[in-house]
Length: 133
Length: 133
Image 1: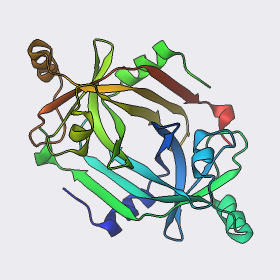
Image 2 (image 1 turned 180 degrees about the horizontal axis):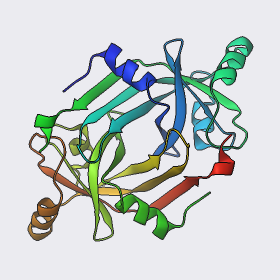
Image 3 (image 1 turned 90 degrees about the horizontal axis):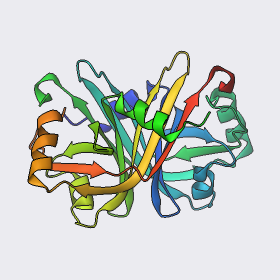
Image 4 (image 1 turned 180 degrees about the vertical axis):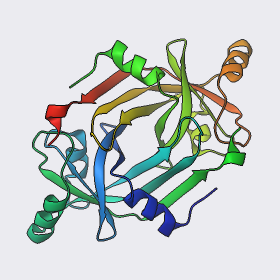
């Protein structure tokens, strides 16, 4: 069952982490990361050495996908949301300070890059009981 | 804390679903899907209309990433495993029959494509208590 954009973003905002999907050296790459939905963007922090930092280091940004889900392995019910859009490093000092104050990475290491993903496309679905094949 | 290949594959095999990551029309794409680890490959089923079917329809296969994780949002402990490798449609009739017998898609619809992902690269890590930043 497809989800409306507003509902999909609300579900995404309600969970603490998801998975960022990008291209690294021409290969598909994916990393779990915690997020917040702030200023209508998905905000994450990533560490210096992460492949993602290179990918989104460019000022013009790169297109990434960001996925979050909550699926119960027993009932097989739940939802998945995928946001696709430009990821850009946050460079404005005030914005950066605010994001860093509220978003604390779960993985230690110097999380020097704060990245904002603009949800240009939002797709989501619910797994419902009758969809259980 | 990085994981050894064997341990990472064991963790992946121990959960019922993950997320397939691929490129669709030059954009990064990701879909949750249930899986089994059979014959040293990650086996999934996908439905006819899925973007993935097009991507892995080619006989030579395409490189995809497959991610599974189990992260507790409260304790922030858990693990994540990413397999990267060639995804190929399973076409051998005996193999196909066997895979279809044991792997039942969670999403209804005609799940006509059975896909095997060879784990050429296996990367994983554990989130440990001291890594909690």
